[in-house]
Image (cartoon, rainbow, N blue to C red; front, side, top):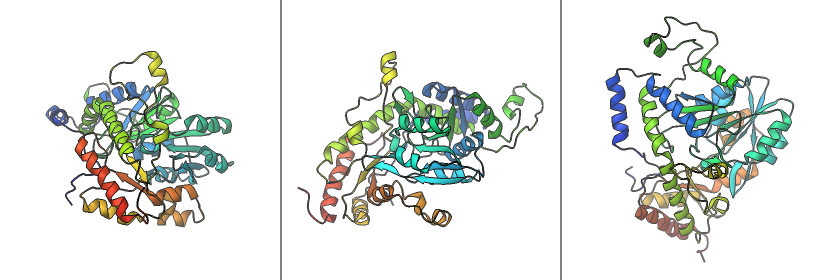
Length: 402
């Protein structure tokens, strides 16, 4: 279908085209100069000590679990309101997942209280997911983790360019894992990044990323080595030079793109306040200043807090038929989505974990609809989406809006 307004769109221009052309002209396509530069620039941007570019976020999550030595005897607490990869990556290690509930309709991130209730002698780690680009309650979660000796993995797929109290998301726990999928704020088609401040974790990731080899093809090409050894069981989780080059260009646009997303989000919140819908994160993040794209003072850096505004979720009023609402938006040429069907309700996970009940997650997930949000949206498109929401909401509601 040709959408009048799609759910997401690329923030691409001639810069990306030229970056790809330069790689092709270089005659080197995998794990070379562009990859090294992308890793270094991303490392500096987030303030992390180490950064590893990877083929996608799922493998970043898997490497994080493997580097933390999570295995068959362990349990890992994860959110169910997330993309399925968040839980799948844990299962790849042979460990079991324990699904935690979210805080509530105003905050769709992991509930510290729910996490606390699930901890037992087999618990090894907690995976948080910064839903929509909004920070989890990291102070409380890190306090729980430190008290119990648990590791924390941050799924930052939604949140490049998001900060909490002066720290970039992904640098608060032990490991941060980013996605550069086509619909993400920083997009390379496929691709991901793993960051950490811990040297021992970085050493394990470095070995496992490329078959446990001591030197890479790029090292040998430059004459830095003539052979290699294999010192660990590794994987082929490498990124290629084309995607790394795209990542460099996208990183330079990230903060400006996030600020445009924030402006659109604020516009939606204002225009739709009479719709009867609920708006997660609005009360906590409405009016927070945009992140400066130029250098800031040490005091500003220390207090920096911002969402990446990756998606715009709204919760339909109870009793509204979500399918009819989505079909009404579709008839107007507007693409919507659902973020997310809860992982614990998928057939595979129901069979593995048959008695999981997460009442808050289930209530929210049944009412959530995601509206279009991307930096290239024009003001008239944002207004068209908002006015269509109001019109369709009236047509599918049991009672008209006040």
